[in-house]
Image (cartoon, rainbow, N blue to C red; front, side, top):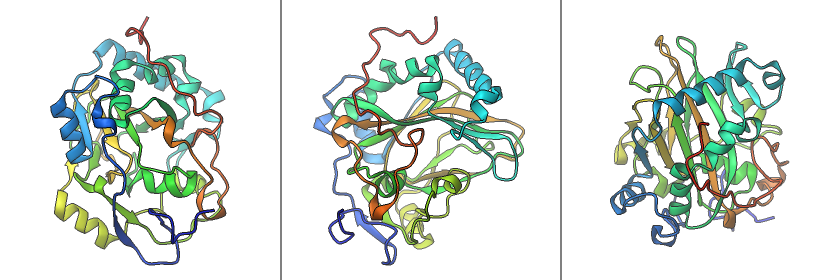
Length: 307
């Protein structure tokens, strides 16, 4: 096991919080492994750590996905699974994990060239799904997701070696300033925040409802925000946000009457397969972190999402 002293991205050790410079590229292989983004879009992603492509999916496809997410959220065979996460203090479904395996429609979405080729281009390799989920933030009672870097969790709790993964959020409903849109800190992907606190056993059972370990300290977060600001990803349904695994992000609670929903997929490079979790932690379940197979996904040859 790599000791904290030799781990470039050590976190949740007995040392205090720290801001560490990123050691990995943001765009791999000069962004030439696939052709999905323009050079300007690649440069924007490299600079900010994220990119929104508006109106990428037409309304018919968005509605089909929304209907599918609603069906899964009502299906007792799915909501009884550990992969279904409810809101703190209620039985309202907050997230459903492993949706690319539970739904043939979302399985095709994961291989849609409009999405997967962006991941292949930025990560400079073939990719697989590290994690997928449908997120629901109902009107009036949808809870917040506190600030965090996904890579910090994936590195510590899943053993992801390097920052060679990205998240893809497909907006299934309009995201406005009032219904708890995703918020990102531009430029934060170039700094790793080493967090304090020893990770409890089976931490995922609590963190998926409300994360308390692996969150940045206020001073580090303030420094990142003072440098880069905060940008809310407001946009119409059918828009897609791609963001680096180390970009600091979060979202407010939704006290508006407008629900918010998205399908969220994490593409990881096949050259960045998971190792052992840090500090002797047990691996998280397969529905949260894929370990059964790191085989590359094959992009669809044509847009076959609906039909």
